[in-house]
Image: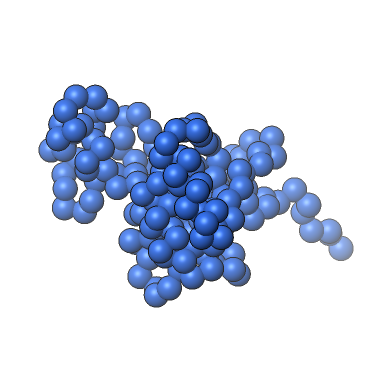
Length: 161
């Protein structure tokens, strides 16, 4: 009788990989961020990535980061966390866990708190220490939302059958 595999993915590896895969759907030429929301039983509830709202053509809105606010992407792009929250159609996200490839901004932190997300697992914190990042962490701490940085296993995740 064979023994079961022992080198399978942990839940954190699995869901963070899904977040990164979702981010690959983003058409943003500079930053691709993905998010995956799961319940306490490790069931996927929703997925999102950064992009324009439905009905706003990604050929007609700006992707650049510079220039006047009306003429760059920041007024138009929906972040992955908010997209995942808005994509969920199953009811409450109370107690859910969010996996996201980039630490949430202050606006997404507010949405996570309001949605009832209780844990955030993030990979990159490249904006750590910025006012938006500090405000996000302050709100998450005040609301009792736990957050921690994803620990890479060092394994390369590849696809084969």
